[in-house]
Image 1 (tube, rainbow, N blue to C red):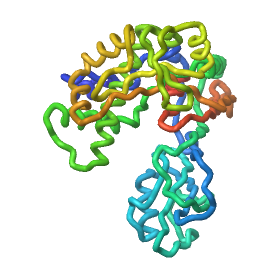
Image 2: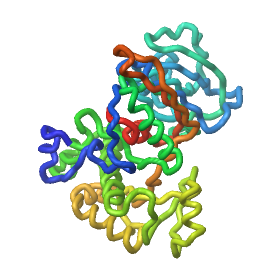
Image 3: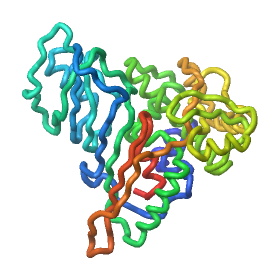
Image 4: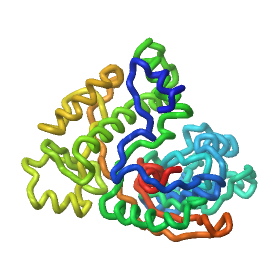
Length: 360
């Protein structure tokens, strides 16, 4: 963490996302990222098909440089309903061009004329209906289209090699920088809460602050695992998660069949999401997670005191539908842009993939 930020957590040791361990070593190739809003495009797909009828209008909206929660409030005001009657599956980056679904509860009201919805940076792409509100987490995947700029032309091969590695073995499933707020402010508030008893009144804010603290503990446990055992290894005491589910199991032994399923991406090792209760890990992994928890004991105690329970999160993330190609040249042909696209499941971060490819 930068010196100015590390002082904030003098008695609560924290490392920044930038300092977390890399699966394949820190990339040597540099690139510019998000120099323009259109360099980062996200398209959301939800996990079900709206029925086409019902009391909830479903709007698929493209938004530019716009906060999801802010737009939800504008939709509520335009419709004459409470903000709680607006549904969306997940938050999207503000500094980007993002397309996502919103649901509007029309029960007992006249549907507004959506052609009159005039908000800068907002474009209505689709409209349909469904019987139920759109719930958080109901995302099939997010498709990312990214432009990395001003890359040394001689380094493009290194980028494609990295991507080939990632397609085969995945990346660490870290929580990204935006999870922790501007200048890690969410962790600053968590420390003030846990250490000094400064309570946070709003329930929504408490949830954000607790999630940030829990995510930080997860990141540091996963980082320590990579440093201790490497990236492509299973260790004694694993808790495995089935690909595409939250179903977990603890294998009796690490045999050839288990290793094959691991290499194929059918199952993934997991890392603790801290809370009350017994850690599911055993043996060597249990010792590793307990050792990290000891160094972060104030954070772990704070999470336990707020009633969170032990859970697990997959340690690996595999992007799908990956494509990469060199784009336009710049600076007299010495530099080039790279266009990268891939899709990720809900609750994961594009920057967790990008940090393994380039320094940006």
